[in-house]
Amino acid sequence: MGKVLVFGHKNPDTDTITSAIVYAYLKQQIGVEAEAVRLGEVNNETKFALEKFGFEAPRYIASVQGEADQVILVDHNEFQQSADGIEEVQITEVIDHHRIANFQTADPLYYRAEPVGCTATILNKLFKEHGVAVPANIAGLMLSAIVSDTLLFKSPTCTEQDVQAGEELAKIAGVDAAEYGLAMLKAGADLSDKALEDLLSLDAKEFQFGSYKSIVAQVNAVDINDVLGRQAELEALLTKNVADNSLDLFFFVVTDILNNDSTAVAIGQVAEASAKAFGAELVDNRIVLPGVVSRKKQIVPVLTEALK
Amino acid sequence: MGKVLVFGHKNPDTDTITSAIVYAYLKQQIGVEAEAVRLGEVNNETKFALEKFGFEAPRYIASVQGEADQVILVDHNEFQQSADGIEEVQITEVIDHHRIANFQTADPLYYRAEPVGCTATILNKLFKEHGVAVPANIAGLMLSAIVSDTLLFKSPTCTEQDVQAGEELAKIAGVDAAEYGLAMLKAGADLSDKALEDLLSLDAKEFQFGSYKSIVAQVNAVDINDVLGRQAELEALLTKNVADNSLDLFFFVVTDILNNDSTAVAIGQVAEASAKAFGAELVDNRIVLPGVVSRKKQIVPVLTEALK
Image (cartoon, rainbow over all chains, first blue to last red; front, top):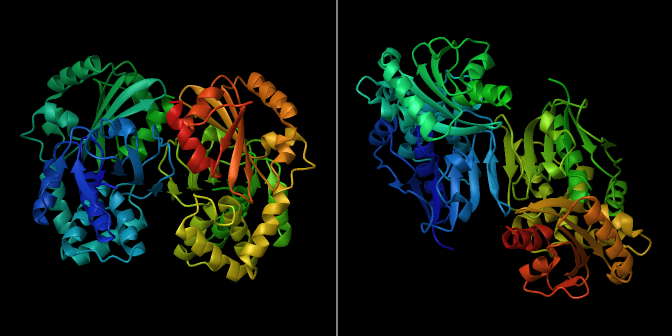
């Protein structure tokens, strides 16, 4: 049996990149030849975390074809978010914390999903189940993932298990979770010098809501006007993206990480319907979403239900 | 939050019925209001196990609609094998050991699949993870499930983990695994007095192989001539079933539990192709399958690959 590749989703975020590194490490400790790889560019937040704890970004692959016969998915399962060629290889494991959709295998596999805030919280259990100690630098990566996915434990996706894992891992990593976490979030949320083209794909995920092909993208901001101040340009880009990719909806969410609110810009034939889904109005192509910070828990289920 | 229903697949076997009872018990111990139910008739093997360890069969339900808002699936995930109305309720957990296909949720969930021989082997771990002791009668049910799914530890689906769990549970249950196991298998494998109509649905599962709608049914026999001696009648029933349900394939497997071989009777437009998938010939509508005993590991993957 050759090497198994471990990777998270396209347009990788901190949980996806670090969980690939962390789980490949755990597999190696139990005698499996595993390599972490990535499917896209590493964002500024993740770079901050990798640098802090002394890691390089994993190797980039464009497709799994010719790379390996067996793969392990972390932090995702939906094929349209996964590697090109995913249907052609054997998925031996999935470690994830999302809904399951557009996923299938021909053979039985190890699938571990739990409704917690972060993949790293599940990985922390797997270290214990295998009796493998978590080294300080690996703990630092796992803490970074939890802080990122839960917005410093403030997202509604955050569970008591995430909080406990975060505390435990901060201790092992030797950092103050609140202080380090805010610095990391800010490193990723400074959007003032970002080209809007880059923001579109930074954390964009494709979904099929009923018969509607959709993208829900999300960016964290310290100042949402860094993005919304350029709305005309943003709308032009979204409109082009909708046309080029035959989308029915591009739902672009800007999340204020200091106040824990979001504003979405929605373009596409079901943009009005997407606003109604939240009991809101589409005004100037914007939807105000008070208290909404979680795509997974507060956005995707609402759109899934409304557009089915 | 109301009661959560726990159930296995249609045409239930011993693992499906007992795992529903066992996991509902575990959930109750950790404070969840859970009820085991079943989606079909209890077979003779399962009756033998329930009687031996002092359990009643779970309540039968025809559909989940109006029964509960939340459900837990054990020993299956594919919707066509699950309860009618499954798309309308929230699946909060799945405990399974099969491939994943035709399954999806709108929300994150707890999904625990492992590539082991039996759901009970995973449940045995969950008792430990929750720190709940396994009572003797529950251990007896779990042992029965492992014996059934692994044909007394002889199926290629049987892993070292199943063997260890079986030994551990036999000790708790206070029975001799080999002696009790063979008696239980024989109770289910005496087909001499069975109507063929009943055999067709005893352990039949529907699959979509590529564009081909298929049923793969399996019966265990001590003497395969109990079934194959009535082949003309069997073929007539399969042909009618193929026509009535617009099937492309009815693949009916008779497994010799003493010699660990199988013979299939295949009817449908891809019957020839199904024989070729095993490097065999379709002779008199039969396919001889030496050493094949596992639908999951030795039949479904082969047909999935050949008919895709």
